[in-house]
Each structure stands twice: as C-alpha cells, then as structure tokens.
Image 1 (cartoon, rainbow, N blue to C red):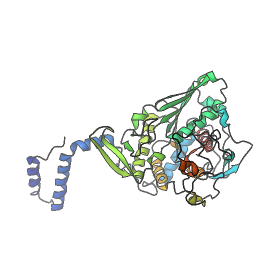
Image 2 (image 1 turned 180 degrees about the vertical axis):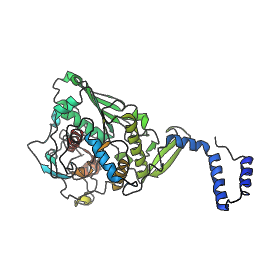
Image 3 (image 1 turned 120 degrees about the horizontal axis):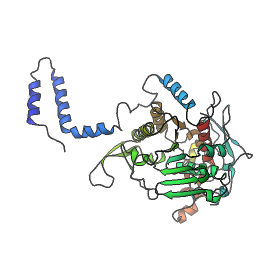
Image 4 (image 1 turned 135 degrees about the vertical axis):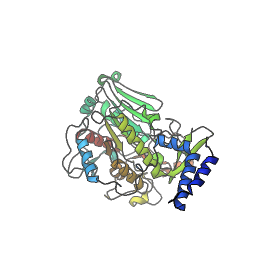
Length: 441
C-alpha cells in the first residue's frame, strides 16, 4: 500500500529551506526525492529485489560495447572457449565457421533420408507432403578458407553418455532438436533401445544403452509468457513476465549441454508488453509497453544470468542460436513482387543479401549483451548463412491444421510457410556448426 507523505515530513522539508548553503534547486531536488521514496517505497523495494530491467549496468546503447577493455574481454572469452568442456581441439587459425558459401554436394548430402527418421513432425516432412524436388537437400555449407568438421554421430553419442542435451526455445529450435535426433538415432538400430516421449512442454529422446537424452523444452520467450502452453499458444496479444526465467529454468537444471533460441515470437511489432506485477489471468496486473529491442535485451540478460548461476563452464556448455530468417518478400532477392518462398528451388547467391524480414536491431542487441556476458555462452550465428536459403522452407509442403479455402488453393503462395525448414535440410547444418563449436571451438 502506498503511504501519503506525513505532515512531519512536510515540516522537515520546510526547515531545510532555512539551512545555510542550500540553494533553492537543491532544496527542491531533496524534497522531490523524499516525496518519491515515501510514496513509492514498496515499489522500489520490489524493483531492487528483481533487478531484471533497465539497470544502468544492463542497458547498452546501440553500437559498440559501452565499456572499455573490449580487446581484453575478447581475449578472455577466447581463452575460456579453448578450455571449454568437451573441446577436443581448436579450429584452424583465422577460420570463421559462419562466413562462407553454399556448394552443391551430392556425395555427402543429405546426411539422412526423410523416410529413415520417424521422429520428424508432419510440419517438416516436405517429401511426404508432395514437394516435387529434392534440390534443397544437396547444399553443403563451405566456410571460407577452412572446412567444417564432419558430423560424427558416434562421437556425439559417446560424449553424451550419461548426460543430457537440451534445446530450449520455439518451434525453430524444435526443428534443430529433431534434426539432432535424426542424426543420432540411426546408430541405435533396435527400437527398444530408444524412445521419444512428450509431456507438456518437454519432449525427450532417450538413447537407453547410452543413458543419454536429447531434449526439447518449449519456451518461445525463455521468460514466462502467456504463450507457454505447448499446444495452444497462438496468441496475438503476447505478454512476457519480467524476472521470470526460473519458471522454466528449473526444468533445465542438470543439463550438460543447453542450446537456447528465441526470436520469432518477439516480432509482433515495434513494442512488446511486459508484465511487471500481478498475474496473467488476474484482474489487477501492471503491464508496461517497451520497445521490442529493450524487452529482448531483458530476456538475453536473464538467460545469461541463469547460465551463470546454474551452469559450470568446466563441465557444461551453453549455446545460443541466432535468429532464423524468413523469406516472405520475394522482392528482397529480385523475385516477382508480392510473392514469397513458394516455388523457390535454389539459394540466393548474393553474398551481401539481408532480407527485410530480419531485424538487424535484434542482432545488435545480441552483440551488445553477449559482449557484456560474465559467462561463456557460445554463439551459433546461423542468420546470414540461412538468409541465403530461400529454397529450404517447408512452403506449402507440410501438414495443414485447418482446411484450405478455395482462394488459398487457387494461389498457394498465400499459405506458404516461409518460416520453418524442411528436414533433412538447412537445420542439419545448424547442428554441424553446433558440433564444430562443441568439439573444436
């Protein structure tokens, strides 16, 4: 309950005016401070107890890191990465796994067949849903000046023996999780030695002989939100709760490798609603509206704070997968205006391409917050290399949850999914990059 300023407080303020050496401006400032602290004392106590939003130490301006010592911090992070858990060696000097080009490769692609992996969701089985071409399966990512280490499923499973690997995020992270399961399960021929189970937000693939699990946890914002139901979550008026990472985080504890992602669900406009008090369903609640970038930065700080408190970098690893691009505007790559990824069968070959559907400001927030991180989170920068792959989306070749209208059937581009990706395909490359950074940072 907010307490009004008492008469004694007013009297003490009047007496301050008589104090020698105090200017009228200072008297006014002191009076204002006393008034605010008295009126909003409980609110300040709450805010100071949660410190998850707009603290001077957390908010970074757009541009380079606001603090000095950038070179020293970069060197420290590189040293930590070299000593990271599970590392077997270093990547070649000067090799950037995320800078390169797509090359056609029929000898090693795809890494598995769609029909061989029973765990692919019907939203991602493009061949089963009638896609006429398979070209999207034969492109391999080639970094400039070096090669990606070949994905070794045996090494991956042996490394996970007695351990938990967890993907946390939205449906795009679920696709990467499914890709990893498809890459590994072939080494376990007996169906009785492996299983896949879903309970609420958690899906677990178990390799029984290895006492290992690969898991996916649905948390599209990482923070608690009104979209956390794993099945019924298509809510347009999205709200996240400040300081709520542990609502989901308690389910992540004990994992040895965690792969986070969050992006798509934040893209509701230029602002985001944040619940600061009360409950999502309660009548009395305090909701503020902030820029998407500020809200996203809040989530990044919460994620890294959780990692710092719950993960030991000497034996565990934390990854973050950057934003997955969409291809909803064909005019971006010189295609027919008003169209999208529908009927696209080849990658974009413009090395500088960056679609209008991807917000650079979010990438800047990621760079700023990771630059200040006190915990070594390994960044998987899949955004640019995925930007080239307008051909790899599920498009119309997926299970449709609602009947299509006559208008949609007449113009398939109107219901093409230019967000998600066919499997096998692009997301296998994301896991190849994860493999490379896990073992050869």
